[in-house]
Length: 278
Image (cartoon, rainbow, N blue to C red):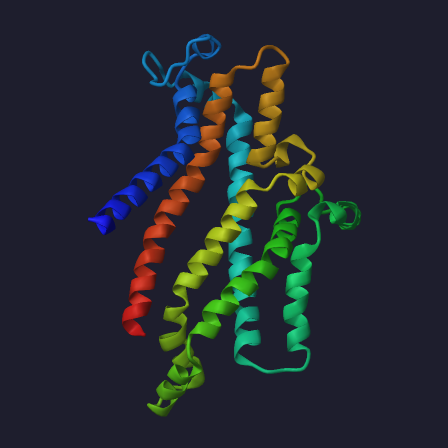
């Protein structure tokens, strides 16, 4: 009975914590469907009764949203691709090979993460200004990748080190080359690590604001966080339309939620597949 009671209590506490965590998201969705007059009333409305999609239509009618969406998707996907390739090769090198300066390189990865991003803004701005890469998708991708790659290497290093090298050696004894053994044995077991690293890189690039604020100064090159900031500022010049602000925030968050749900299922299947192969 005590075990069941503790299990039920833990479940109830977890449910309460989940509701508290999810309530702000629900409130954003609920507010996005209500008109501004309803949101400004003193009586809270917990259900979108009498709501509509007018706020979403108004946001989508703003041409800046689709333009910013294209910029954010391009920069984010490019950052994820660059990070996975570079970090995977880096993690493989420091986990599978012994070379001079290896420990110093690992230590440098940790030290780089301690540097505040704000401390490098002036140097980054001057460097990219001299290279004519301000307001450039390529330039912003380079900055994002440089910020995310060190921690991604550290993440993947743990996954690579967790796969015994004896598996590759056994495959090579069976007649496979070193490359074939890696691609057929080791690489499938690293799929969960690659997915987890890709999720981290995606979230960092998608939600990043300060670096983009420094190097993306023109309207046509704004990312979604910058567009949302300018959208809120434009709304505040008249009277803040919180319904439209919440609708815009929802549209910014939807791609992240969809991406995470898709990748989460693949991550789970990858973990199970790796366990079976192991």
